[in-house]
Amino acid sequence: MNINWVRQQFPALSKQENMVFMDNAGGSQTVGYAIDAITEYLTHYDVQLGASYATSVSASEKLNQATQNIQTYLNAKHVEEVIVGSSSTALVRILSLCLAQQWQKGDEVIITDVDHECNRAAWLELQKQGIVIRQWQINPNTLALETDELLALMSEKTKLVCFTHVSNILGSINPIKQWTELVHQQGVKVCVDGVAYAPHRLIDVRDWDVDFYFFSTYKTFGPHQAVLYGKRDILKSLPGFNHDFIQTSPYKFQPGNVNYELCYAMSAVVQYLCDLGADQTDAEINRNNLTQAYQQIAEYEAGLLQPLLDFLNSKPQIKIIGNAQSNPKQRVATLSFVHDNIDSITIVEQVDPHHIGIRYGDFYAVKLIDHLGLREHQGVVRVSLAHYNTVEEVDGLIHVLDTMI
Ligand SMILES: Cc1ncc(COP(=O)(O)O)c(C=O)c1O
Image (cartoon, rainbow, N blue to C red; front, side, top):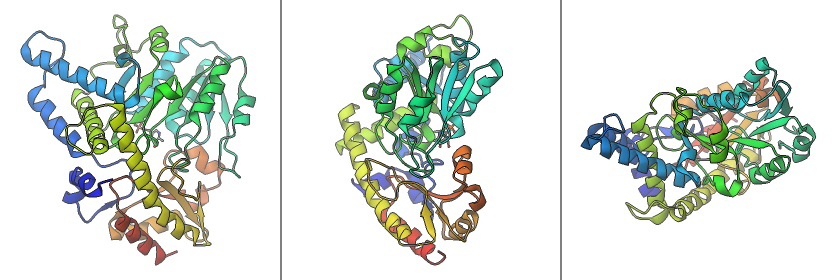
């Protein structure tokens, strides 16, 4: 991967050159392509869509193209399957309210205790209307969600199974294709949180055959919004969340206008990734270029993670919460740890003066932190790397940590 070119594409990295950004799972830096796209949209296309005058026609064309680019990014079959919203949390809540209208009292939903609250709270809320929530719990020894446990939780009443693709604490990649297949064998649907996956690996909803899949664009080098994929036939059969005369997808799940300039900006992120993959500007937006980009990202990030893991593994008082090996097939570069004697807040506070942005806490994966007994450490210290970080930055962090742990 051409790291110099990559870094040049992120204006914050040169404008804030003293700052090292390693809280990327909280929010990534925005690629210049996306920043420029917002200006371009608001300068040239800032009118309401769907009218017959020239600027509105061009705005509609631009937005349609942008949505198709996001469709390519997801590998969705149909453009109607791409739903845009202000955040993943908002989109999952909307989805839960729509799905629940088709469920009866006593129907069941399975959620995990590994997930960010985003893919838990909306479903738990449905208990108020008599939906039964079953909790699929992590094995605290293996730090994995065991497939047998899932199968044991399923019943003829199960309507939906919700799980995360990558835990924003553990960084481990879950076998969602295998789980989806097993869940589908029982006629049940899945809803997958791809928020911590999308910045590191390429989404492919068609290959995985997932029913619902979402990610947040502000953690994927774009602006603050989110995307929910849903299979067309399922979306068609669902009641909507918009005015009752709006019955087509995605509009029926997008109350009011979506944020046009941010959609346009997310499409520019897709362009950036294709340019990275093709090693040229204005590259064609296609799956091949996206695949190349993410291969480079995966390989590069594994190289960034290795020295950090080696360092932490060499410290007996450190416990890595998650897989301690840098195998790109098994984990992404989101790494959490605790120290036997120093609480997480103290470690982070001592790193802050060095202008390295890392973070401590539960990261809204509250059940996971509780279940693993990590609350007493003030949660975990999390270092979440992105493909614009450098080996020198990682060395700098190691150096700072080495003086205190
Ligand atoms: C794994 C994961 N899922 C979901 C979310 C929620 O995303 P949003 O802020 O778009 O609602 C986050 C945000 O931190 C997250 O890390």
